[in-house]
Length: 155
Image 1 (tube, one colour):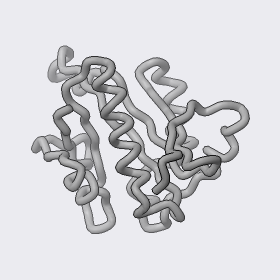
Image 2: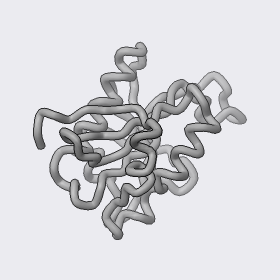
Image 3: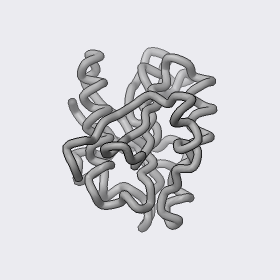
Image 4: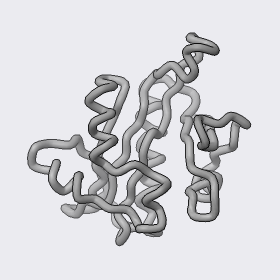
């Protein structure tokens, strides 16, 4: 990993590259493609924070955070959370620290916004990212979101 890592907003100049981003084939069932994430970002407006991850001039990933969304409005409308909604690292960029950079960037943005916790959900299973999130300090909450495990990191 180089020190030239940065996040950028999606622009007309970068949209095609963002839409072409592909994770490793065995991970495709664990994360939605960028096109779906961008549609959700459009629908959720200011509550979505989509960003591209660049290493120098090379696109290596995509992330999207969620900001202050009701977690389970039917159960507790006051329970609002922020966290990492999507993380797609290009297949050829796996294992190079880009995922860690992405999580740390979301953590820093949430800290800047005054949040105290960073939430994430993941597909359980052998090819799921659970071990990755645990290595970064996330702990499971005992909750699920659909079929996904919920994790939290104190920030």
